[in-house]
Length: 297
Image (cartoon, rainbow, N blue to C red; front, side, top):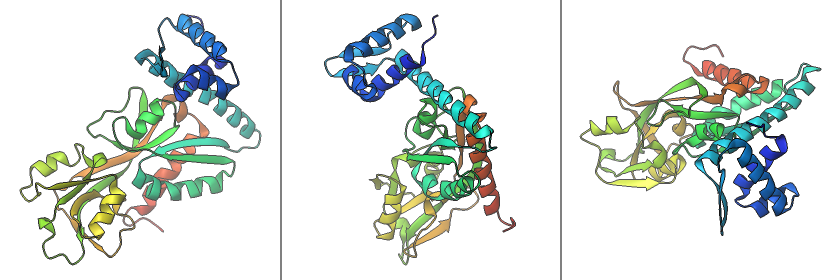
């Protein structure tokens, strides 16, 4: 198979991101016909149709989704190559570092690690995107080439995309959260959110006879915690979601059989070898070591 040139990869990514040949051309300062010609050439080289063309634009086929993901990751390595080469002469780590994280990790797990990271490496520019942990979730952003590293839930109902590497950072216990001063919190409706509907809690819930039938859905765990504070229900929530909980809620241990979830990092094999990702993983691990009981402060 003939190799795709970097510009051909950029065109594939632009079409996937923009949703049409004309919008991709505008983004790349190319004509629509030039974009169309480039895509046709890439399809001939690959031997597969990469985009479905229609009146509403262009969308990747399954083959196209794979090709675009690889294109993003290859183009990102070109960028990393330049950043690491420039920093090598000065013994520094520099350039962009793209991170995907779910809400509570972005709020409570990442900031101290990034603070230490950028203090050690001022030339690094972290870019954090908050991604809901649904479907492919944060790990899917890494697989698609949109993030270098993700903070993700590991070992749940959804398997990691093939070819990714991961490592555990923290085991989070779940706890019962209810309004402070409520006489019978278990009589309240259960508050839940989509990201929490996984193997971490479902099996445990099924074994409990006190979980109410009435369930109120919320957008995310931050909204759930606010609704608990307002006395609208109780919830079963993981530890990261409870960082910064106010005096308006009470947190009760669910005992030795309580559900837990594993939170960790996810990256690609190629990004795992880059200096920026290695440095971030070190800081994430160091931060969790500092928070363990009995750790030196």
